[in-house]
Length: 111
Image (cartoon, rainbow, N blue to C red; front, side, top):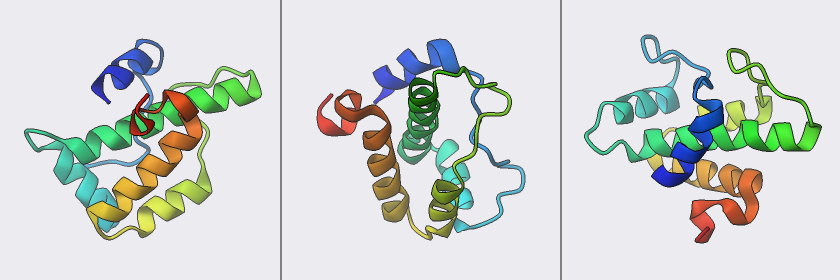
């Protein structure tokens, strides 16, 4: 996973998570922000790969480069993410969306 993140960050390092850890608004955001502070922030890294993969897939699908300071929002995904109340829900969501975004390139499919 870290190798995929590093690869995407070469082009998309300015992409942000879309919420502020100074004021997390719900349980999902609190879990993600807490993970960012851990020595091994697996949940945060899964979220990061998911964000980068989404932008990559969006650009490939539309042929348009996104503004890294204002990437397009995926309202359905944000609603699903923010409805999660535990880490398992978030992990499942990140794996599914990253797989959809990257296909065979996803580390969750052995890629």
